[in-house]
Structure formats: C-alpha cells, structure tokens
Image (cartoon, rainbow, N blue to C red; front, side, top):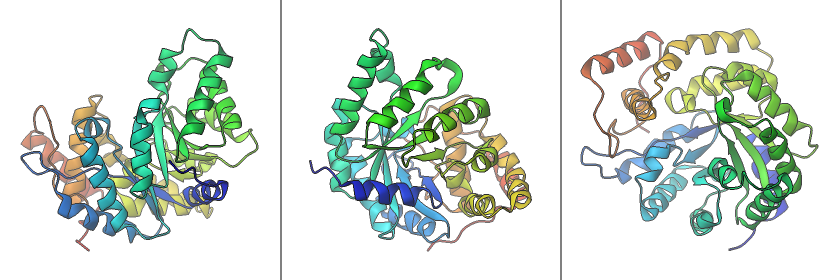
Length: 324
C-alpha cells in the first residue's frame, strides 16, 4: 500500500470545500443484479452539473452490506470512469477497523481519493479503556490507512459528552484525518458543538454537512461542503443552495431550502429500508437512477405511496433530468 503525500491531502480538503459531493445509489434490476451499464452514464449526468465536485459511493449501509467486495470494486471503477479528472471519488467503508485495510487499498487502486468511515462500533469496543488508550488506538489505525480519512460522526441520541473532545483530539494528532461527515447535524446544537470543536484545532479540516432538514443552517454556520442525500435527489438545487450561501444570497438560499421541504418530508421515515426505497423512487422518477429496485428489499413501496412521491416531486417543481 502506497501512502499518499500531504499535498494530496491538501488538494482533497480544498476540493471538498468547493461544493457538493453526491452520495449515489447503485441501480439494481428486478432480479437484484447490478445494472453496471447505467452507472457511468448516471455519474456523467451528475458530473456535468455546476457545483458538483465529486461522488460518494456505497453510502447506503443496506446497499453496502448486500454487495460483495468484487461488486463494490466494480461500482467504484464505473463511477470513476464517469467523473472528470479533477472531481473526487469518496468511498464509504463502514466501520473503520484494521479489517478494512485491504478494502481501502482496493479503493485506492481503483481511483478513490479518500474514504469515509464510522468509529461508532470501534468506540463501543474500547469503552472500557482510558481516553488516552482510545486515542492511541484511533491514531494508530487512521495513520495506517493508505487513503486520507473522513470520519463519519454518528447521530447525537447516544453520544457520550466526551466524544466531541475525543474526535477533536483525533483530528489534532492524526494527519491522515482530513475531515468529518457531520452526521449528527439535523440536531443543530450537536452540530454546532462538533463544528466549533473541530475548527478550533487550527489545521485544515473539511466539515461536511450531511443534513437534509438543517442544511441551510449548517451552510450558514460554516460547513465547508455538502455530502447530503438530498444532493442525490435534487443535485441542481443543492448546488445552487451551496452557492447562494457562499455568495451571501441568504434569502435566496433559504427560499430554495424551503422549496425542498416537501421533498425532505418524504425522507422522514424512521425505517432506513423504507427511506432508501423512497430515495430510489424519487431518483428514478427524476431520471437520476436507472431503476427504483433495491436488492434484498423486504417489500416494495405501495402504489399509493409512489403516487404521493410523484405528486410531491412534481409540485416541488423538480423536473425530470434527461440522459446524457
């Protein structure tokens, strides 16, 4: 495994701070087979949108768990082929652990620029250790990875107060950590606490908003970039929201976020499987995903819910996007 240079890390941080990363979904046919022929075309239509700076692949936990290692690699290759050379490819790798070293090395070989991983389960495994022992283990792990790391912060319901301090210390001591996927950030108080703790470190770090409901708040608080699922469903609008916030057009940005509120409301299902099916239906209806089908889905959406989804998309003014 070849470690990348600090200049690569700086370039990735800079790119993350220029716009929107789209977390994509993999298209499956009705039999659960990957529609590989469509992946590069889907990526190209996103890559051509002004303000889209990259793609995050394998972002769905359910999807990732139902893909083999070979399939994940194939999806990464197909997406890389659809991106411009200056656009980023980020790979979700699940829980950061020594067991994913080989997978991350494969991500590097197939063209990934960085990985996104969670520390949730790892933190649970080390709860009996001292803060110093947890920190030493985390720094050792992240520094061994062949690609720079974006740490995904889990949501705030079960967060120990010390977690914010620990992630800030990790960022201060591990040069391979280049940013954070702020997953607690529909809770704006938790988001603000994490954001200011990380920004007080004094070295470049990308804080990425993955929110839907609080995206406008987070951008105006200072989030460097966006990696929100909302960008998969409304990429033009989220890119415009980002640009409006950055250019001081706050009223325009707020109006745009308000316009997307009915779409955001569709994603409020507490069941992650239903939420993913809804995302797939929206993306397919708009022409951003080749199929609404999901591998290993317990049951499809009802025809009544599908009609409601289509009505909300139409009333929100989100038009279908033509194939490239």
